[in-house]
Image (cartoon, rainbow, N blue to C red; front, side, top):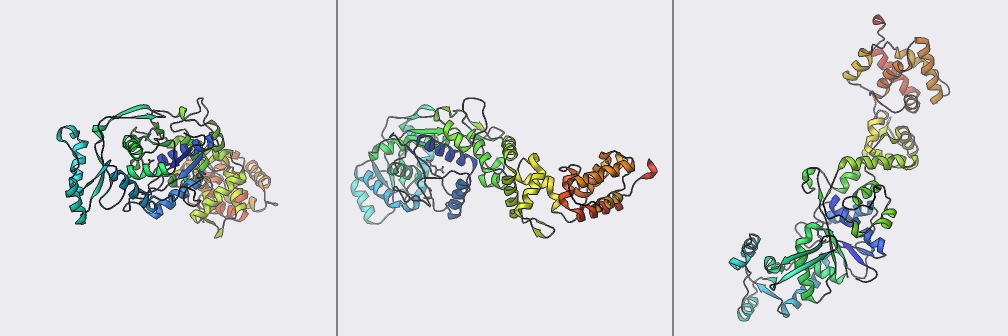
Length: 490
Ligand code: GLU
């Protein structure tokens, strides 16, 4: 490995970026930044049926949202481009020709179905016994079929022996070549297989080390054999353990949505997501949990990447996100809330919510919100036209506690508050409590239900001030009229 390593993230654009992929991208990014190397993004879109441009675009957007910028790749180019595999087919063809000419690969004129049978036999462990191999023809027969224009796949010949992976994370892993068996590198439709394209590209892009998920470990011996056959220097490999769901099976869609987009849309801030992902399989060696991207660069090293699988815990992510939100200055929290309200198309009294108003409301909710959408749990009543508390809450507040507050009278008092501010609202509440010989909380409880529809809300006086005189008075009065004081029970 040279002094300035080059690493890459090589997603297949067949869906959205999930947390496992994002973690692989993050570890590569951190490795490059920590070592002063380069981070390359390569889109592995050789599978034309499953790859889509939208998926590639969304993966790119998500990486950008997480702040994982690349030095070479789509958008910025670089000296080893193009960075879409679909634009590199000529390189694969040339490399396959070279292996054929050197006798390290051969042509198979079998059908896809016949080859699938060979593969399956091998997967069942029948390789040695049943001589499960692709059919290799003699030169004349091969030439005759080629002249006749028959389609063929290019198969790599695996010589007997053993291939050892010196994994940067897992140590030495040995594979018997007989178990690998010959494998297709160019399919009969002319497309390069994953193992082949990845080696041609990683070699051409001078990637070293190759850092990726453990699910690719079984591909690595085949890739090492290809590096050697093509005369390329074999890079180092590091396979990062899988991420498990709460039930300890590999994290997948079965565990609910695990895409980066899902978490960002659900109000997880990118900084918190990146911080959480870094802890999935890596730790600084002490109990420290909070890191900025910058701090991660300083702290990251491969030797603290765990061999054991990490468990994805959405509750912990939410907790961490809450801490991030709480630490944000009001200004930034306001921006997040503003963007969120816009994305939901929420308006207040028919008006679009201004950034300043969003900031005011975000400050009111403060660190109660653990995710951005939780803002609505506390401040949703600013966006509702009328308030309808549940019968259960009405029962809880008004009946069980036998409160006899005349909310219409409170409303009249609030109507007279001048100037309209927190202090004026609070004084009106306190004066009213004194006059009606009630405890303040016996007024605040019903008033909260009347203006917010809930039994819990941010500070009552501040909420009422921000809701405005007109709406507060009319909500209190409407509720007071529907639920008049229960003087008979006092
Ligand atoms: N394109 C492969 C994938 O998305 C990754 C290839 C690699 O990292 O070697 O799983």
